Amino acid sequence: MEQKPGKREIVLLIMIFLLILAVWLGYRFMRAGADTGGKVRITVDGEEYGVYNLYEDQEIPIEIDGEVTNTLIIVNGEADMIEADCPDQICVNMDPISAEGETIICLPNKIVAEVIESEEESEVDVIAQ
Image (cartoon, rainbow, N blue to C red):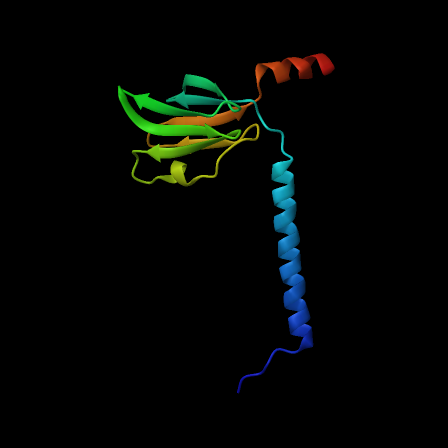
């Protein structure tokens, strides 16, 4: 015999839903207000490959041994790995990065893309301190 949910169960479910919604909105709000970095640094096997401005839309083919293995794009202040020749494609499925300290990592190709603060911002911070 099935019982229908009572008022208490319905109120509890609504409260749980509202709590989850509030946590999700809080996360989205905090992420939007996070310190955005000014540049993205790409390293391949621990060696710096290049540093690129996050505020300049561009496509960066990453070459290893003369072959393009990954492609990173920068659009609207966010860096995103859009192509990789590795089998797992984890780096391609990661969210775009824009806040200082965020990374995209491709382990098979030993590529790390990390958002760093621009040199102009770091000079201001040193003076302000």
